[in-house]
Image (tube, rainbow, N blue to C red; front, side, top):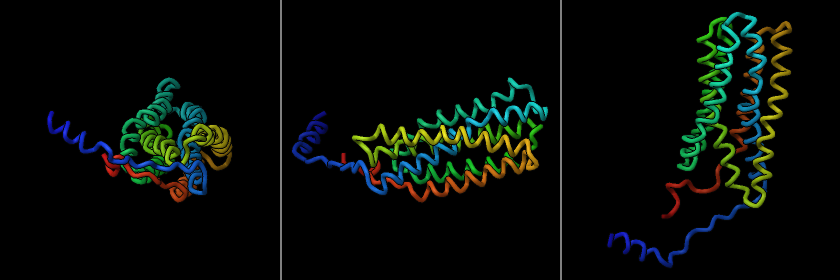
Length: 220
C-alpha cells in the first residue's frame, strides 16, 4: 500500500502526453476509404447470403432452415470477434489483424468457389465459419482506426465507413445473381466475386495505417 502511494506521489506533476487528432488530412481520408472497403467486403458481402441460400436450396444441399444457419454463423462471428479484435487493436496488432483477417477471408472465399454446393459441411465451414471469422478480425479494427484521425467529426467518419456495408449489400447480390443464373455458374461466379474482393482488400491495406501508440507503448 505504501509503495503504491509513493508511486502515485512520484507521478504527481509529470505531464501526461496529449495526442493531437488532426480531424482531416490525406491519411485520415485514407483511413475512411480503407474502412469503407473493408465494410463493403465483409458486412456488405454477408448481406448477399439470400442469393446463396436460394441457390443452395435449389441445389439440394439441405433444407432452407438448415442453410440459414450458414448466414447466421457468418454474421455471428462477424460481430462476436469484435471483442478480441478490439483488445488486440488496442495492443498494437492492427496490421496483423487486418492482414490475417484478409488472408483467411479470401482463402475461405476461394475455397467456397471450389466447394460442392450440395455438400452442407463444405459450405458451412468455408462461408459460415471461415469467412465469418476472417471478416470479424477486420471490421472492428477498421472502425476503431477512425479514432486515430477523427475526434470532432468522428461520427461523420464512422457513418461514411458504414455506408460501405450498404453499397456492398447492393452490388454483391446483383453481381452474384447475374453470375449464378447466367452462363458463368456458381463456381466461377463465386470466384469472380473473390477476385473483386481481393483487389479491394489489397487497396484497403495500402491506405490504412495507425498513428497513435498502442496501449503497451503509452506511458503509465
